Image (cartoon, rainbow, N blue to C red; front, side):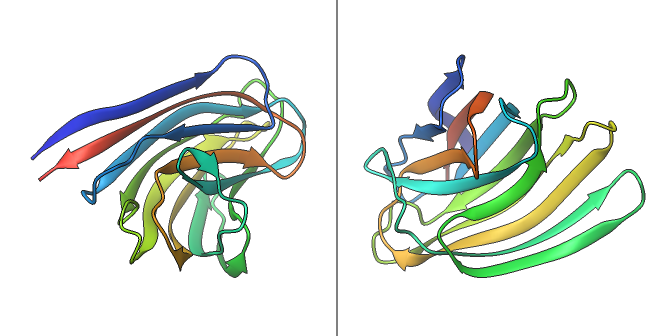
Amino acid sequence: MALKQIATATLSSPAATFSVSGITSNNPHILVFHNWQSSDDTVTYNFRVTSSGTTDSSAIYSSAVRSMNSAGSGSDLSLSSNTLWQYSFGGTGTHETQMGIWHLYDFADASKFSRVSFYGGGFTQTPRLDLFVGGVQVENAQADDGITFVHHAGNVATCTATIYEVLL
């Protein structure tokens, strides 16, 4: 087994969305992202899939997430039939960045639902470490080729993301 880098994208000035795409095979893929920060305070960090390199705002998502933090608490969140998937909360503080490693399955297969298993985390203004483990399923059978980072309000300030194909 080996990894092949498919695409890397780095956002250097604030934008409403930020995408990385390029998945063309049915092999599993890995998305690695870091330094994801908002240019606005108190926002929800969300994701959408891309199809043909364009954000798909009509896709429907179901997700389950377990969050834990360094303050000793945590919570569970499960959502169904959403038009995006919620990942975390953040703001503009120096430490408020997000990172993650995601496993992407069946993205290029138009006859299957795209699925993601993920783990990641970030820091809050406290600073406090938040960790997330979970999964997401796109409830539309379609060919997807990447991920779009989007906030519920404001802009994505910075982010670097790379997609790797797992060569089986």
